Length: 202
Image 1: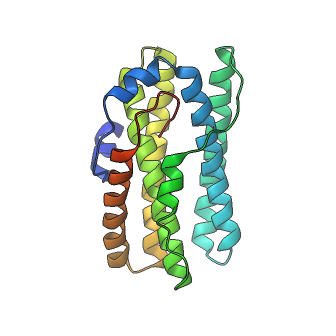
Image 2: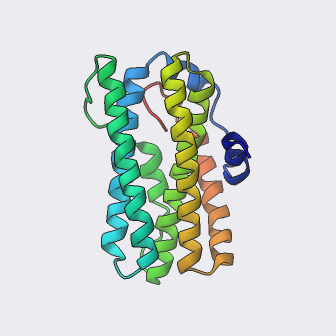
Image 3: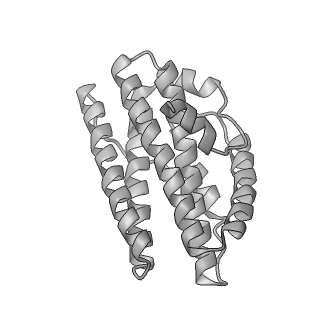
């Protein structure tokens, strides 16, 4: 199966990105790359935080150790793309999309329930990134960046699967499926209400 077909099969997003996003993002690639670099950095930090919080969960530690290394390698690659184009990293921006999603990680209750929500929210962030990378791969006029985003699209799809699988490893798979559908609906509502920005990856 081709990676694009695989991406269509595994991602469960309720709402596609507004098609205007890729057009305006393509014309403002410096800001998109800066925001993307910080997205990769935060993805690595999230993996590290989960390892620190749940060190007794061996599979989680092993899989997220690999994921963290891959996300940091992506950060380095985005930095390279910025500098090849004469740009610097710039300042971090508030990621309203992630901030809003994180408010739906339930506090209190069973420790495993918190873990499930953290893993599923991380999965959705990877899924949305994958969908945006696909748009950039298909439509961005820069051939080098198009290839770059194709490679990252495939990687992010794998990360989505890893996070969902980990949730099902440590929680009841049926509960995970129900909660995933709830969060997918919430994610779609967040995307609907956020403005289309030319300087944000999400």
